Length: 111
Image (cartoon, rainbow, N blue to C red; front, top):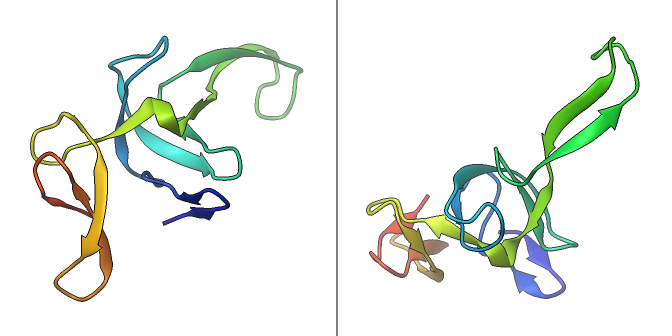
């Protein structure tokens, strides 16, 4: 879990998420990066923006490239592992005595 001044975040890097509002509503993707200070996440294929780049070693021609911009975590819900729908997250003590995340819809633990 990532701890911020406002508490723990309900998603983390590598989670499969569903966008619940905005221009990308209904789309699914994998969290590539978390920005906990701003409570934002970068999700694969979501919130694509055009960026103008100068020529460099990676892109000798330069030009306009599409990249993922960050999206606020309040606009994201975790994808339920069993049903595939959006779900909220709870925390409880697991079988091994550690705190684990679980799906509020199905009750299943989230790895």
